[in-house]
Image (tube, rainbow over all chains, first blue to last red):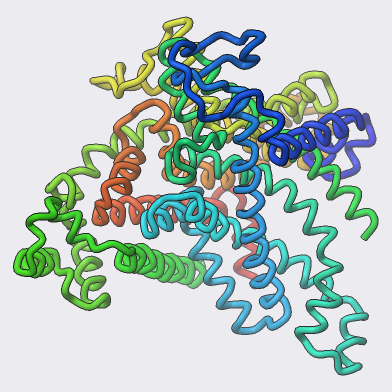
Length: 283
Length: 317
């Protein structure tokens, strides 16, 4: 472990995870995706079916994770919750990437006043700390899953734009870009066909790590009641609905979905860091 | 130095003006007429009444005039009138602010002391089991949403062990601090990970530098080297990070206040959004943006004091 001192330290520590940890995390993520896709077949119960004779049941053979305050099966709800939770984070990241990569590439390509203007815009975005920008978007356009995703996407876009700009600047300094330019290849074509594909390997690892953060932020919004609405079993919303039980000493309905969020986030972080290592080596 | 200061200040004012306009214009553009929320009872929605309410709240004026009116008011300390509570917004804010600021202050003390402490420990015992435990713990904590951490704390320390109250604000200073202990821990835990990582990294970098080697060859004790040279030289990045995290917390209390049922600014914001109380939303967003920017600028200005080398560098350029 003494080799560690040579590299950048913080990076080295998170990267020395054993291979089995990586495969375990990959497996957990796969499980979450399978749950999201096959929810209708996998879930033992209807996630919204209430059973007032079985409120707040402890885990049992019939209900592996127990039931919540309305007698709904928590396992089924968690399985069905995978879809809105994961899809939300994917949509948020897709939107943020589209906006961020566009801004970042244009800024790196054009430089000059375009770059300055875009830097100003991202500065203003950065002036809204954390969830605040999303809260503004939600206050304006009312709550709902779409607003939450778009608002959060706008909040994530500046980070991605800054990152893209920095790697795009490096890429554009390479000789092949000048070579293409001398051959008369147009700016847009050159960016889309040559530069962007070369940026993707670096970008993907970064995006996977951001995915965990996005999932967590989105869950926080849903916890506040600004995103998905009942009867959805999105994980953040489940935590909020289970909050009442915690005070009575019944922790399952709130903490099981909370734990699931945590596991998925840890798994994406491990996978993302490993992935960006591998992809960076290739590039 | 003066020009740098002026430029920094100018940038601050510019960003502030733009942000305030974004906030105001956002509320202006919001679909749904605030008049309907103001009047409430649909039976009273007569054209005369609507016109009267519009005139009363200056909703009939163009955007620029409204913004100018609002901005002048804000500069004079008048944040407008809450549409829901029928109270001046500044009264609402000032009754909720102490709670939120106390919470942020407590969390800041916690994450600075514990975060820097853990980071320093990990840096000094690098490669040891302690280092792995600290890194592992902080990485894990960083991946758990803070509302889940908050609920775990409630379940364990408030419901099971009954050491702390489940919810509520508390009256008087000691009682308030007692009530805010769990929320402050929940708020601070995520940041402890970040701060300890930054501390560990900068301190490890410092330890490998020549001047530390020189100090060691002079025969200074490890303690002296760490306190006077390693820690002292690591202060810049660490303080910057602490400042940024604290600034972010001014807005980050929204979720934690909701978990613990605290009546702070964050709760007020959530309520105001749910009741379409736009003047309150505007004022709180503005407060949070200003708070965030003031702290970040303060950190920026403090940096040369902690690390005089940066001042020399900026003078030369």
